[in-house]
Image (cartoon, rainbow, N blue to C red; front, side, top):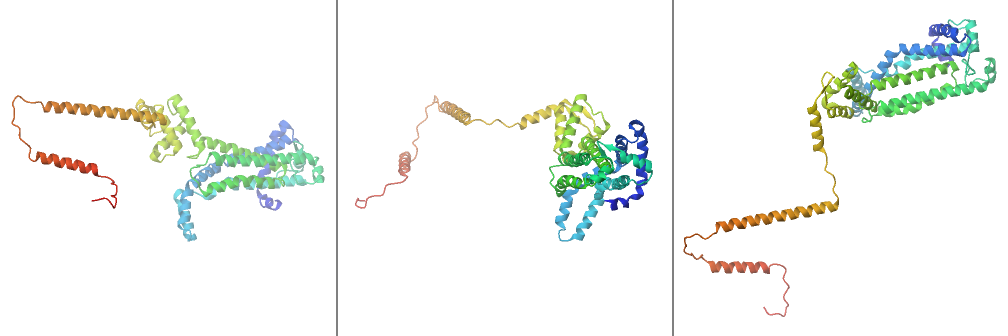
Length: 428
């Protein structure tokens, strides 16, 4: 670690200068040799660095979101050019160029923060050795060596020997307890930050290898920090714990205010927006109007959360406009209720009710047939009333023969069916 830190020795001067300036401020309040003065100086250094890295953090969020959206297309390219790795790489680069996505953007904050981290490690290592470093003269180095945070010197480590800890004016038990608590908090904050990203700000409807990779990192990163933390000085643990807490809070704000489409965070965000819009009858914030405008512009490409939001607005009697505003519309609410009533499924009836309704239907059908027969007989009687003029009877040709033929045919129909075989001894 010392070898790596020495590579960034060129930045130790500005890091030490910033720490000294903050130490002057906090030293006037808490005392120059206290752990609060030196500890808060390190915390302020983290805050200053993270504020400067906010633009990179925004790029990281956008890059992560673009990578999530590109995962299906990337998977299709990999399957299509499975046997041609060169063509696969060319198509990937073409996809990145067309969408304006840089895969390394998600690592920019960590890469940009690494020099300051190693520079601080180099400064604290020299403080532990009693050597001047950067702007820190011998008096400031001695003051920092005597500063304790909850009983542990800021330059002490978990793996230090009892002699090294005693030279710094502390006990090994205090150092082990303080460093162990800080390592646990550092790993827990890293785990919670990654879990917050995976559980709330990821579209779970799209299953991609990227999600599995992020899930693995959620468990691997805390273990790495725990293993490395035993070799970090207390001041570096303060630095890293502070930056993890900052990242967690910053990410929580971004997830609540600008969630990934299709994620649980977007559903919660749209529910809050719906409640505010229906309560005030308008979209007040310009940022919220931009969100509604984007949802309206998607049309049929809206995800499930956005469709529920538009449907809930219509049910409340509001219509989202193309400019992101909403207008009151009773017609839309009536149409929504009518559509919902049409789509409502009939209740499932029990077996007894179905049989009763079937019997009633048969009874109604029989009654209808009886009524039709009665009406038909009445019409036939009316049509066959004898007139006043007597017409001569004309015998029908072949009447008797027709009767006999009908009788024979009737008899033959009656004889149809399975007949018993005759006994061999019976006479024909």
